[in-house]
Length: 229
Image 1 (cartoon, rainbow, N blue to C red):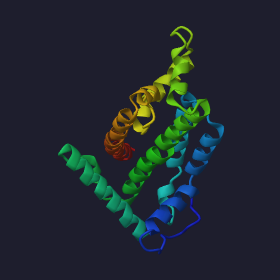
Image 2 (image 1 turned 90 degrees about the vertical axis):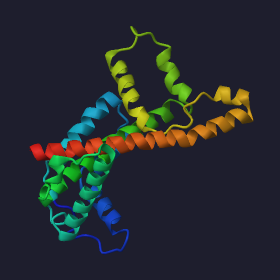
Image 3 (image 1 turned 180 degrees about the vertical axis):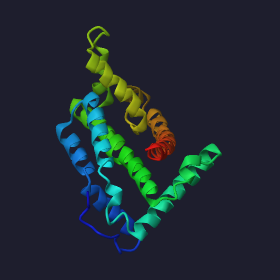
Image 4 (image 1 turned 120 degrees about the vertical axis):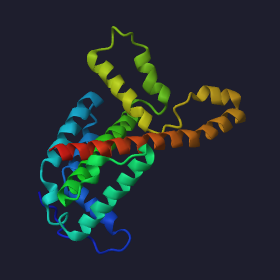
């Protein structure tokens, strides 16, 4: 698989962002996101489909392309690898031993590409799908949660239970400041609105903390997977 660009962008400052965008457009990840946003399948179907798509894209040998073999791109990959390694050591107090030996540019590229694929092409599209389902089911959070509550456990099928379980695992990664009941805030008036606004920064910080820990875990898993292959 060879992208249409053969070398890194020479545009200052935003050059790495442009290269990342064109590389994302050149892979199958763009098609995976477009298909998911268009078809809007349930989560229990979207998760395996996205996982298979990410696996196939990572088996295509993208890191052997000319653009990622360029010295500038290899330096950027090494820098990203060093930043993640520093963050991992700062968070856990010890370095990731098997990742510190990634002196091979191909290993660095493959581990970073797998890490980005898990974030950009697996988790983010699934979270987008949850928000799209929420918008289609109703504007408020009560409309999306009240329907399952009206059914007993016997009436819910296995696919419905799996759908609710997947939503419960993924929703903590979303920042949903409107997920609180609006009735209580309306009854409390201005005081309730002030309390709700005070919870917004704390909720955002909590989501960012979850994403930080998840990113470190996925990066370590990507390094371990590449090291074992």
